Image (tube, rainbow, N blue to C red):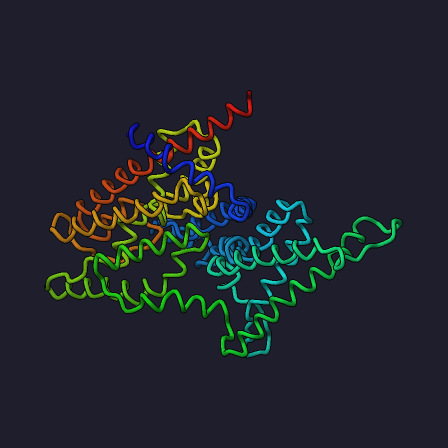
Length: 430
């Protein structure tokens, strides 16, 4: 391990450090850090609503006379997750503008306005219009990040042009003077995004978010339940996550349209006494790959908790994320470490799930572990999910083995991150 760490430090860390200090990536990371408390609160609310214990659900239903008690958690998660794109469009733009020594609040407002301009509203049967949660929430993050970066770049460059800045007399309050100074750059920036939307509409693209969403799904909709497909799905999921886009949300239609019928076929075959046909199913991913959530981040948390406790920021996030992570809720990990645009964790966040997919596939294909025959809730804790999905202790053993494997694979990269943190603290003390 020491040799691997040394190789990574000499060859990988310099490149990762250069990428990590890039202005736009820093703005994106810092933008997500700002909303981390909301992600933790939202994760806790999801956990309360979806705790996969029958006596717990039945008990609360009996106490409250139904499942109306879930409205509290739903409202909290709605306030945290369903407006995530709006929040990050503001926080990313604010951080990027400040890196240019510009007014961050105004840049954030301009970015938010530009995002709303680009988002297609809906109108219900009663004629009431609104913005769809699907696009202003986690599913629209990619567009939100792109708009925040582009809008801020345009806005700050226009602000640098003195001919576009309205200068007020000395007696005008500073806040008013700053507002007028940003007036023309803000108008031009929002106008540009409005013009882009009009041009797309003229070309027949009414909903840019939906068009982007369809573009990502189209190449992979016809793929079957094979090992190469499973690896590709895993890579896409975690590549999306690395760039701040919820890979699970993007690929959910594929999971439902391909891998949900696969588990149904297995259940039907079991009932008919026939051979179980499919190895890769939705339960395959939930029970053996997404342990602790996308990225098998339960291994990351265990690695920090047991072996890298000197990294104080990672330790704090780990302590807050362990409880949700046991039920595969890992937004605090993704946005808290963060894993999003973290060059140190880029390799393991792609490598670990891929290896788990390969190991699990061959364990099942060789008969060491039974094929999945039960559709388990995604919040089912690791190991328990392996047992329930296969109806066998061998499924639980495979899940446990994968957790140990994931922890081992994450550890060298956690050691590098810890060393960087300690070096930084030491330099600051000197």
